[in-house]
Image (tube, rainbow, N blue to C red; front, side, top):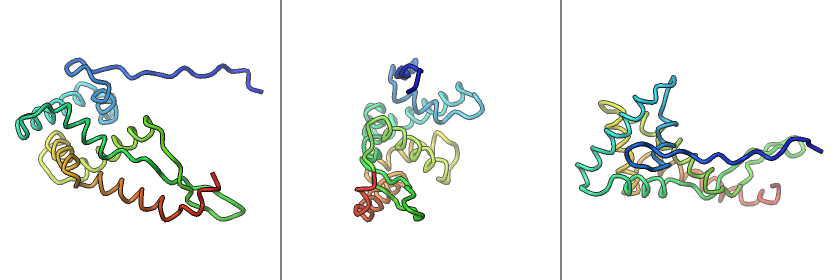
Length: 155
């Protein structure tokens, strides 16, 4: 039996301008080499561009985009008697959100464009419309889970 106590859940802090945890999670994922101020600049420029393009609250656009990208189910590789099976597993809300943010940023980085703020805002607007690379990744994951439904008992 383990002698260690249970780990306490860490709650994400909120960012200084929007007072939102989701924005802070996005900043922490976008940050490279500890350059947090640059990550904040990128996010805020993207939000400003969304504000100008849609004339709505950029925070609601961000929430809606993340909600659309968040997967409900994923596949996990499991080895059973020598062969590897893709087993579908249900995702909890924080896991799904983390995946959504990861996919959003990967799709943004892949886009052709001027700078990261431009690419991120374009990807967010596409996600709200229901298109874009991040949405495609979610649909692909759901399709894979549906195809491997037969291995769900191997959880």
